[in-house]
Image: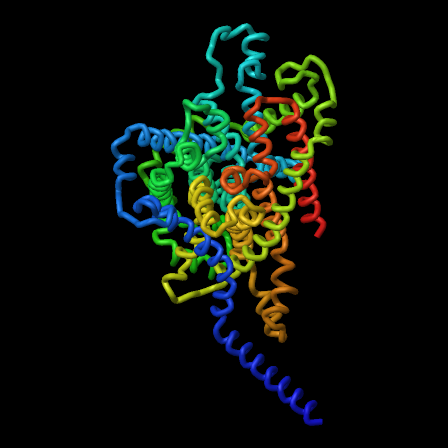
Length: 616
């Protein structure tokens, strides 16, 4: 009896302590939100932050990475200032990123407008076509443009052999224009989807009200639609610019040795030249430029536009308006609607306003052409996978399945596929869990500390996105070397969780910002605990965002090349690295065959995910 009594008293005491802890947590909800933020902040600050310290130290101290006596120096930064070639490459990279950003905005906006404002017969299928490029490996998409732009390629065949034009020309491949076209093709969906999301969330009754008050279609667009679409457009602009500015693979494959961007220069310093000090200085300068652009963006627009199209409940809007400085509404919208531009808009309205039927046909034709631009290069990859020749040249001389048969006996390629799948699954699970917790803490937390303000949290969470990917790759390489795990399976998984978790957080946070919390409050008023409310009310309503985020993480991990290029070892490869290595030996049809298999797998995955979402 004494033992049983002791156990009973112990259980009672533990239950009492647990009940008191629950009451304290309910009185201090920010404690829970802080715990939710902890894993994500640790992953970003602990890994990325520490690795950037390695980069910063190597840039200003000699022997920083060798463990010998340190000596402070600024010679690496002085070397950058004294050599015009590095400044020219930095400026060229900036200009290319600017061209790509402007081009993708101009191309994406009309198509996004058409999809958002016109009734479409096959709306789901059309929207899936925007998503599919996200799931197609970037090495494959870039390789497709090599097939088109190279000598004896698709474009060469039509211009020279079919039309008899340009018989003696240097070719389009390995030029700055080839880089720009390739980057536009890769990053167009990053602009298209945020703009569409913002446009589809606009209250159409406001547009109709403007028309009822006498505004023409274009006047309603300029006064109502366009200003309200700026949050999505601004999110697309910052994503495309930052990703283009730090692009490594596209200029590597399409620019050649004469046309490189700053990311290629940095990779060369850490790779071929082994100039880690100067490479670290270039990385710090590069990060400084990107962060300056991000700070300016946050001041005028607000980083929260990466999470939300501007719709949501009133409390959330107030929260965001207090934390976003001047905000989008008081800056861009106000400037756009200024009287200075009124006369210009009126003149354009008089010149461009035409019939609704003509407008619909024009938008439809334009959107189809944009889809053609996205998918035609991929079609050529598929077609050339059936060639009988030993090189992927156009046109085909005969049809054969031998390149698909060869895949079944390529043990190294199969091993690379299995490595990529295993890493992607583990990454998706962990990034999904950490991303969900981080999103909950960000959106629901109301912290008094300025170190946990919305702006600070936004900046920290998107740091792995805005820090140039090549810099993340080399910085984590230094950290992995220090920890002794460089070139292993673990290093790639840890790195992939770091770079995918922010995207998962963005996707889930965008749903939480627009989440109606009245159902949660009703459940808690009826006696449900926080956990019961989360699993029975919150999670079922945001699960689509969680699934979408995890699928996004899976895709980014499976597709990742830039960072993985620095983290893999000689005995361990992922599929993108394997394909890149095959490209170095020439454009052989076995690359087309494996690319086609990946394309089919990607499309099947997108369609399955969409059907799963609509089913539940």
